Length: 248
Ligand SMILES: [Zn+2]
Ligand SMILES: [Zn+2]
Image 1: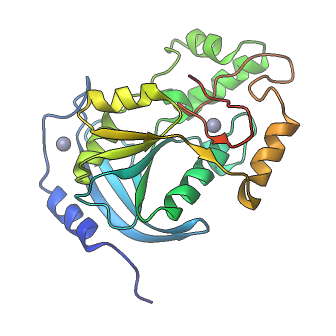
Image 2: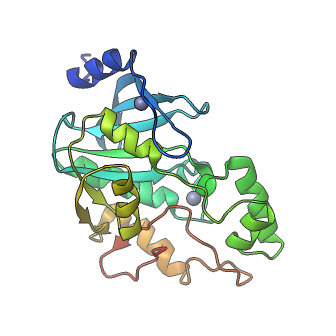
């Protein structure tokens, strides 16, 4: 069966073999598109682009719907990796629902991108996230636990995301976010954010579980012993008719 892979993305991977630049952000991170493949999913049909970077072994991913290379006004969602939520369905956070809704939403647009950023646990890594959970189980909240482990509350940086968008030739983005701070962070890296698309989803059969979970667990970010939790994504989705759970 013929796989649907964008020729422009294949060309980008070829061209990026030679790419080198001064890098973005305080760590001078530089990325190269290093592979692209067809990716049919239960949410829609995508191409997946893997990016190599010059700083660590983390392989960041762009999940691309439609032909986006070189275009303006491209809908973009940034998702920070959460293994426990995304893959295991952990209910300590709602990352999996957010990712699902993002992919569904982008798949409904003519084109768009979900950047899947490997900054697990607000940037502190999986092992430290589990250690922070352990401290939370013992009574600390998320912020206290991160500080106790010697981290700032949020170690994330969006330099990689900005470079990935520039690599993809995206001229301007419509950022799918409920968090205006995210817009500012990308603009710092010369990403032209022309519009903020509120991440509001109409209730339907696909997010019924999300709604049910939210309503069953009212006080979503309070655990059973009453400790507050910060959401792991920088901004949450809003479902029409439901109260916001944004970290704003
Ligand atoms: Zn570079
Ligand atoms: Zn999570």
